[in-house]
Image 1 (tube, rainbow, N blue to C red):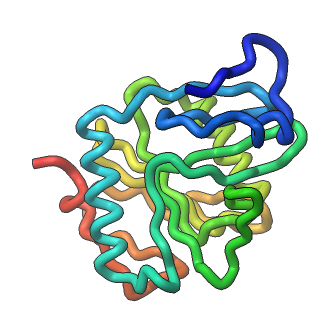
Image 2 (cartoon, one colour):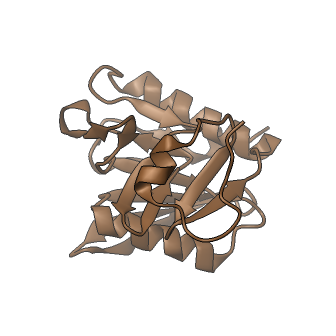
Length: 184
């Protein structure tokens, strides 16, 4: 089990010396934020999204990640995010010291009931800063998907969908029927 700092900020170098854990922690401006395990609906929505994307992409060229992996947004103050799902183009990824230091082509956030708009907006600003071209905000509660595209360094809402097909901009041949991602 890793020992987490009690007070103050964790630096990038200090963070690298910590033991890996099975839990999920993000670091935001040097502050470690522990996240509880995903509840059933959240986990099922993530699994359904991953299965649909993996079924339609060549995983050797476009790996799909979910769970505990880190995308370093910046080293100082240290910020590392963990989207629910991320699709990378293997040719463009940068992995340093075991962590991604490059933007995925698509990041998907699945909202928890306790997720606040402030926390989501904070995460989106971090994603903008590293140039993630497309983000989906998935709300299991509302059964909607908000599609955001990076435009001149800022996200703009492309669509808010409750039905229809999701088609990632960078992967136009991928099509996901929104109704298929929700639990029965």
